[in-house]
Length: 411
Image (cartoon, rainbow, N blue to C red; front, top):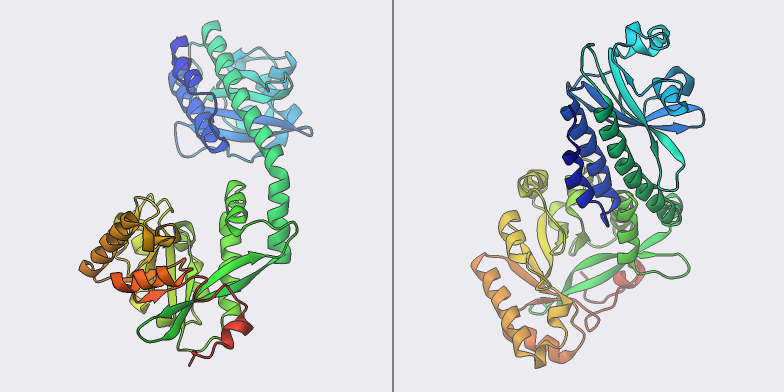
């Protein structure tokens, strides 16, 4: 019944893939083998402190009594006896077998026939079991099927071993991020956005800084948080802190917030903006942000757009996604990236690219802000190219709320 060639593509795709891919691959293994054997359910369980914990499940039907995270006493499961060698790997009719017919799990999960093998980690230690079962007896399983299941279990064990190793490596990072979240070890600084024609500050970009030692750049904090599954939680805390801190700013200026697509798609993001007038909020979506579903993001942005919140594409000129982001999201503002602005007064290529982006913005009726302006020569070049709004160290470094409120050109 089995076909050993089924495992070849999976083995070929094995080395070097990350934990996120590994999870998808393990799920693919379950689906492939369950379908090949014609069984109703396939699962991988971990043996943990005397219990069998279901980690992965694939089923023929959507309804099943088995779910990831389910936990049962290990001696109450077939898995325990498969691993100990007390139960053979194939049970063609569980209700005719001396051991399985009296076990409560047989009726609880409606197990008619069964095939299972242990799962070992790369170091040889026992992780748990890889099993399949049917709700009707009669499947013609043989040693070839058992050998194939063992091969898949070995491959799954290697992937799980990589996951566990990655979890060990990530644990210090996760603990560090959790500590920052719990104790709110961050604060907000404000960098002014200056309108050259109006000769006044018209807005501030909220920038998150972390109050931990040793110092680590903000982008490293957010990258680490996303790597351990806490990125959205950290983004929420940063946005909430910025909005709360910025409350005393005068009505004449707006607040610019950096927001990821993931954060925008989160249902709770709107709640944090309820106390802010729409004309005082600018949401910056980085050019580097990967957007998998523009339709979903547009739908999430629709309530904000209806209120009058502006959307900016940040870091324009740093990559290739700027134009698509602007077109798909119907952005109101393009922010020219500091890597484009740096030394623009002596680089014709940078000037040409900036001019193209500015012209594109004019055609699309989109405003432009140049960030990263550090010298008078850069400022003069941008003014000549038609830019009216700028930010950067020449205009003002990131500053505390108190320093921002002391600026003499705020209304």
